[in-house]
Length: 159
Image 1: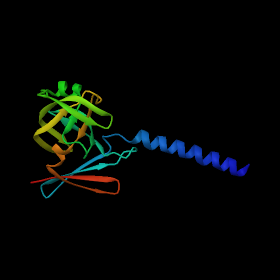
Image 2: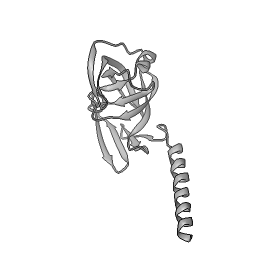
Image 3: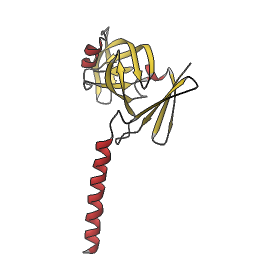
Image 4: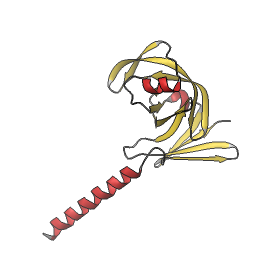
């Protein structure tokens, strides 16, 4: 009986504290930004699902960014494109984890995360993405230096 009570207590505490951790994590709390010797650094913390996330903006319109080194371009939703003034260009085929779909190539005037700003960045408008979701693909990341250590991904603006 004692063993069963101990097991139930541990299981309950695990559930309570894992929910508190999950509820306290937001993309806003996951982003730490500093400038050292004129160089901008942004540290992203791993979220409970194992992704590096943070808040940023496309052409001044805020969104929730997810680092995706497997994506060729930055990927944004149709809603994000409309709200931020991104103009779709040519239709393209997109290979996603869920299979092939169609989207539109585009060019972002600006993209910003934690004070790191890049201009004229290739993007793909992906209809299946959530409204404010932005996948930070290599068209943005290739302009930065980045490294991962434990639960932190550090982005560094190149001079």
